[in-house]
Image (cartoon, rainbow, N blue to C red; front, side, top):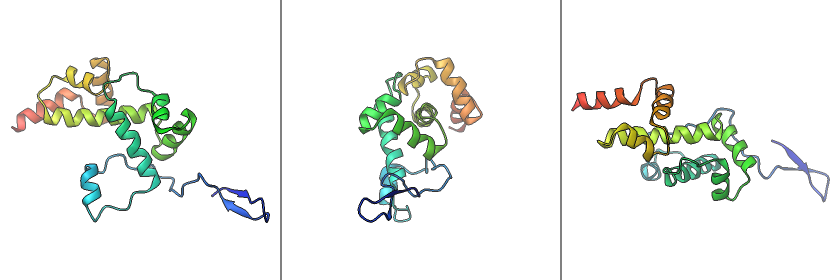
Length: 158
């Protein structure tokens, strides 16, 4: 933990913005909805890091139709600088903010693919992608299979 000299005694005080966290990236999705996580007594107490990532996730979900959402937009909503947001997301997740935003949107797309009959292109637009082909490409890169295969497997299971 970084320390800063105290003005009164020359002793060192803990750095006020340094969170005690491991070097391991925080898991983005626990499998529980926020309401389930809060009501589940087995869920650990939320840390400042989890709280920050949850705030970012909520912002991305609320602005999912905005395909121009960027780090500056998130920073403005959180009343932080762009650099602070970039550093915090990178430190906590190991991913750049744009990758983190994309990952959130892709997980929203999985939920929509599982729960709706909308076309893949409509789902791509609804989660903030302006190009369905790019959406399919990054979806396949993230999950190892294209969204059409997920939809096909869901339909085969019914």
